[in-house]
Every structure is written in C-alpha cells, then in structure tokens.
Length: 217
Ligand SMILES: NC(=O)c1ccc[n+]([C@@H]2O[C@H](COP(=O)([O-])OP(=O)(O)OC[C@H]3O[C@@H](n4cnc5c(N)ncnc54)[C@H](OP(=O)(O)O)[C@@H]3O)[C@@H](O)[C@H]2O)c1
Image (cartoon, rainbow, N blue to C red; front, top):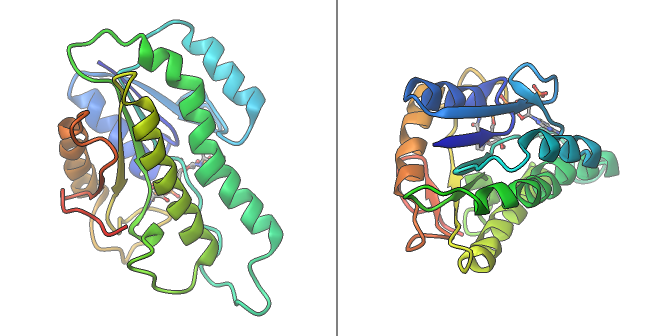
C-alpha cells in the first residue's frame, strides 16, 4: 500500500507519515523544501508537474491532502483580511487540494489493490457553516470550500471506484493549532487513520471528526 501525503515535513502530515511508515506501508511524503521526500508546493503548477513526472505510472492507494495555511487569526473585519491573504489561503487550501488530486488521479486509478483507492481531504470544523463561529473568515471560507470540493469529487469519482473522505483532525498541538490545543498529533493521527481505513464507496463524501463522529456541514 502506498500513501502520498502533502505537507509531510511537520505537524499532522509528519505524524501521518510516521504512522504509516511504522505500519510498514510505503509513504511518499511531500514538502515545499523537499525534506519530506518529494519537493511539492501545492500552489505551483511547475512543482505539480514535477510531482507527476516523479510518480510516473506508480500506483497510489491513498492520497492525503493535508498541506494547509491559516493566515488570518487576528484580522479585523473593518481593516484586515487583505487580498493577499485571500489569494494565498485559497491557492493553498482549495486550489492546491484540487490540483494535487488532479495530478495524482491517474496514479490512484492505476492502484491495483484489493481495497478502494482513497482521497483524504483534511478540512476543519471551522469550515462548517452550521458551526459558524465568526472571525478567521478567510480560513473558514477556504475550509468550507475544501469540504464542498470533497463532497462534489466524491460524486464525480464514484464511477472510477475512488472514495473521498473529508475530515476534521481535532484541535491539534502543531504549529498551526498551538501549544494549548486539545489533542496531540499522536491522538489525532490514531483516530484519523481509523477513519481513513473505514472509508469506502459506501461512505464516500463523509465529513467526520478524527474520532469518527459526524461533523455538521
Ligand atoms: N492543528 C489543528 O488544530 C488543525 C485543526 C483543523 C484543521 N487542521 C488542518 O490540518 C492540516 C495540517 O495542519 P497542521 O496543524 O499540521 O499545520 P502546520 O503544522 O502548520 O503544517 C502545515 C503544513 O502544510 C504545509 N504547507 C503550507 N503551504 C503549503 C504549500 N503551498 N505547498 C505545500 N505544503 C504547504 C507546510 O509546509 P511548510 O513547512 O513548507 O510551511 C506544513 O507541512 C491543515 O490543512 C490544517 O488546516 C489543523
């Protein structure tokens, strides 16, 4: 089994990579600096083309779109949320997710495993419209878009036999989550890996918490 993980150099991505490597699976980690294995900036089409070339015809069983940014924690509605924050956040959290999926799709289609090939999108509870909490408007909108993207791709890719799951990893102690966050990378990864294992064509399009509880859309 081969799993490709974006943003695998730190935080959740690194935790997921370590988890699958420890389980004996083949992991292709990507990061912007190349330290995680393959160099990939998900916003850069040349970088994505290089990934495609590196992968060749190799099958990928699971793609985990984990890379993301959260740039607008302390913005003020009246004066903040500058266009450059919108551009970079949507380029990474939405366009980057789609272009990564599009790049890896041929490899997912050639995966000849007994199991269904899977696409995992790490979104966030902050993308839930039902749980709108105000502030961080750009991040919230980008994670809502990532959720919507995953739900629609689940429909489009069902005929290809590829399942798509969208997940909230919890509030996790990473650079993004901060030291005061609720759960460790270990706990989040343990839960997420169970949910990813359970993902199937029957559950495609699901939006779940790391512990398997359904998330509100
Ligand atoms: N931590 C939480 O509490 C929490 C909660 C809900 C959702 N999430 C989501 O979980 C995912 C992982 O978050 P995390 O907490 O592990 O964050 P993190 O520690 O800040 O790590 C973010 C990762 O994304 C990578 N990245 C950012 N921009 C990229 C780009 N343009 N191309 C490729 N990689 C890029 C970073 O690479 P560099 O090292 O090069 O910057 C890093 O590897 C994100 O999608 C985040 O939105 C996290």
